[in-house]
Image (cartoon, rainbow, N blue to C red; front, side):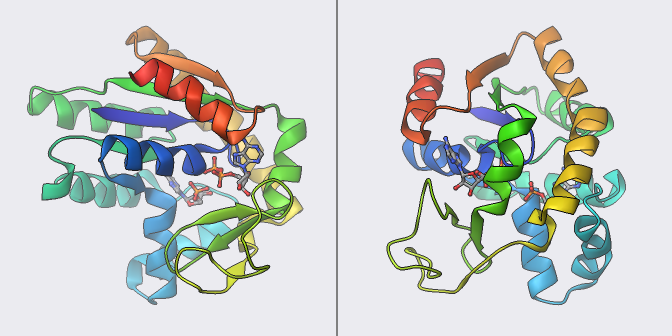
Length: 213
Ligand code: ADP
Ligand code: AMP
């Protein structure tokens, strides 16, 4: 099963993608996590991506598409995957579609996690991320067992640089300008399903599994 998660930054794509990946035994592929791992490891890709990310801008398509296609070509993606944060532009979606078509394949579902802008800034300022294993928490809604420490790997949790309110406004604008058109793109392919992302995360997940079966 090949699934795309759509939605504004902070809508809960990553939170749901992790649960989907576990339930359906497919890898969770997050371009944001791949960039953050590269920044942490000081790679050339990380150095290039950081400036865009900190400004709330998109990393250029040429860079992003390459890392995504390399990732989904790996063995563990043979039986499917859940993409989180990719595609974010129409050209990215077209490159993915071309690559899949060449393999006689296609995306099965694009799940749009719908959350209004008013809720997003609150979500993002409360988000705490583990840069080691990619786990995500929320200080009010989904707190870790021990404040500031990742339940999964014991590392320190941080407020992402791009989750500061000034940057979140930029990211929302970029979302509306460049990513939201993907809703029409995938509606036209008959694979778009929208869920109400303002519900409790377990209820959102129940709505998603009702769609995926
Ligand atoms: P995205 O991957 O779309 O950017 P995340 O999954 O990281 O979003 O979620 C953004 C923030 O909102 C995180 O702090 C997360 O713990 C929290 N969150 C996710 N889903 C819900 C929900 N259904 N209700 C409340 N908070 C949520
Ligand atoms: P995320 O973790 O999905 O919120 O992504 C964090 C940041 O990484 C974004 O604001 C972008 O700067 C960059 N990024 C992640 N995925 C993409 C993508 N598909 N295209 C361009 N930039 C991306």
